[in-house]
Amino acid sequence: MSEATSQVRIVVGVDGSASSVNALKEGVKLAAELGGVVDAVAVWELPVKHVAYAAMGIGSFEEGAQKVLNDALFQAFGENVPATVSARLVQGTAASTLSSVSEGARLLVVGRRGHGGIMGLLLGSVSAAVVNQSPVPVLVVQ
Image (cartoon, rainbow, N blue to C red):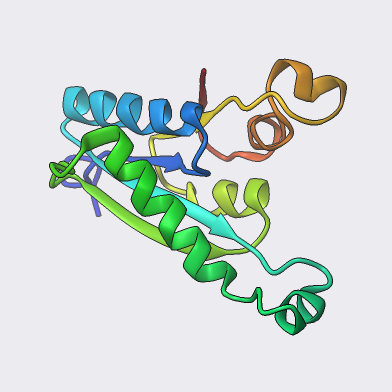
């Protein structure tokens, strides 16, 4: 696809936090200004001891991630999710998966949760890792 015919794509990482809802809103604003689309991505993974969770009747991590994604879209846009927004789940680890999914995008937008370690005090462990791993520019939203 030539640059003239390719559509601007902005990837937004969604984890259900207030900052990821803000990231969705910001991603849509930027996409509108650039005539592009938003790819809202929620990443989920099985915990290390997922068999133990299944034994306790806790097992549908993918369904939980879908609920988080749907709730975040509703919080950001209500019943009127813009037509330029597509949403999907991807299984994997958050930072590396978001970096991989953003390949070829114009921008990756993530929220700043502020959890985990010394860098987590400033950005959050996933947002800090994404800044270091992403093949595209990253916008971290509070």
